[in-house]
Length: 497
Ligand code: ADP
Image (cartoon, rainbow, N blue to C red; front, side, top):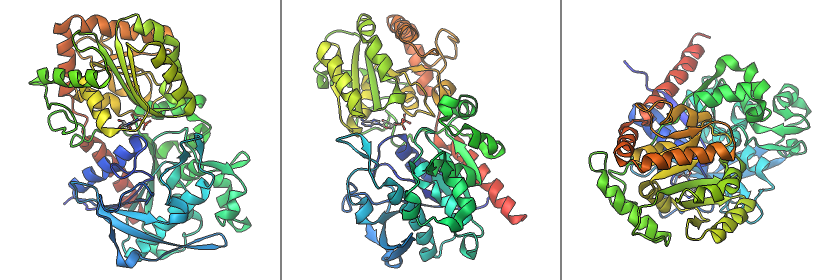
């Protein structure tokens, strides 16, 4: 008989409630896949001001009206509400503590692009509160699955503060790292706010990173298992100190407990056959309807609709990792290929300025939307011919997998998850599903786009390429099975202790 595991999934963002990037997609899709496999899975996330109680039908939970969290000298009283991930039976608890999470922003002040000043305290509190919440629920998970630095203190607290509490004695922890570059690195004076004083000698060395404290390091050193989101990225962070971003040695010290598991796609959200956010549904058996989506997207961009120039889409956080400096350097050469570009993005102000300049210089070829817009993200997937991801590094990347399903041919830099999912047309024509380039330079990127345009002009082969991509299956079931295997290894290990 299959073991039904009790799994607590902790994340700072979960789609559709609050999202800045792929973490939210994963934090919705993986719990749903685990639920469908029969596991008892519950999610805890912060209740940000931007989460609409009414829209998502958040309900009070009597037992969780007063969640008391001791952080340093301060006793904070939070509460938790609950709702289900839409169209699922996965229960989410929203930790409500207005002084820390009442604002709309998750981590960064969008005006200045700088981190919120109290992030250490905010997420320190979230970690402790999650542990208090399950205790109040009298629900004892076997696995606590943490995600990224925001939850990095959970295994740390379990090891250094709650280690004598029998309630947590059977909990094992998994930390998934979705991006090694975001670490929760704070000045050491935050130790006091977190209530971590001299009595935590061992604990402090697990937390200190040079002269700072680092939540991700704490998670890496104290979680029972560490996962990152593709095999190629797992290899890269161990071998390339730049991609490892200061965590390489810590990860090496945990090598036997560290693995790469490629994220999946939630096809209930990202599938042109069922997607109600696009102009017309379509499938690999009926790809003609994709043209109607292109038409709608061209209209939205104020581009002419009566020619057949290739349309390249980009949907991305505007951050250094995503290759917008390459795009900036190469834009003239890209436009010279007689293509059009639609970019949807939000992020660092410097990239906003740079992209606005590009758009002003090439208004006939570049359409820019500086916003977060899920509906438009879907239309761009459906209406574009190609999808560009020239990332400097990419832990997994979801958009290239969404693109495959939408018959939108990915052009990617071969790194991390992009390397694990995209097979280049010229390297392996029979099995290819896109175009890729490896050296991070303008020439190789332009060359990849040029090669894509050449095949686009040879529609017979283009259609074959599209169909290969659309038929591929990147659903979550494969990844969820791998996570369960990891969970089970921990549960069995506890039993034999
Ligand atoms: P990352 O997690 O690094 O941001 P991923 O490719 O893993 O990158 O996931 C990005 C997710 O965020 C995708 O679902 C993508 O559609 C979405 N996204 C990014 N920027 C925007 C935006 N401006 N508007 C709507 N969706 C966006």
